Amino acid sequence: MLTEKSDVYACGVVLLEVLCARPALNNRLSHEEVNLAVWAMSCKSKRLIDMIVDPKLTCKIEASSLMKFMEIVEKCLKDHGDERPSMADVIWDLEYVLQIMKMIHREPPS
Image 1 (cartoon, rainbow, N blue to C red):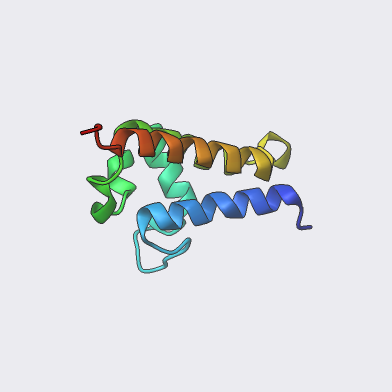
Image 2 (image 1 turned 120 degrees about the vertical axis):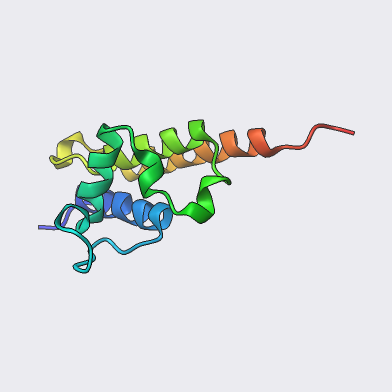
C-alpha cells in the first residue's frame, strides 16, 4: 500500500540518485552495491560517504552540507514509515541545506 511515507522513502532514493549519479538499482554492480539505498546507508555508517558521491560533485559540496544532506536521506530511508519525516519536514531540511550552501559560497562584499 502506497502512503505519504512511501513517497518520503522514494524521495530519499531520488536524492541519492542525484548525489551519486547512478540508478536506484544496478544489477551490473557487485552484490553489495546493487541497491543504492542499502549500499549508501552502509557507506554512511562506515563513514565512507566520499565513496558514494559523484566525483563531479565532490569539490562542489562542502562537507557540512553533504553530511546534512545524508542525514536527510537517512531519515527518509528509515525502515518503518512512522519513523520517516513528513514531506514538509524534508523540504524544510533541504531548504536549510541550500541556505547553508548559499552562505558558504557567497562572495564577500567588495
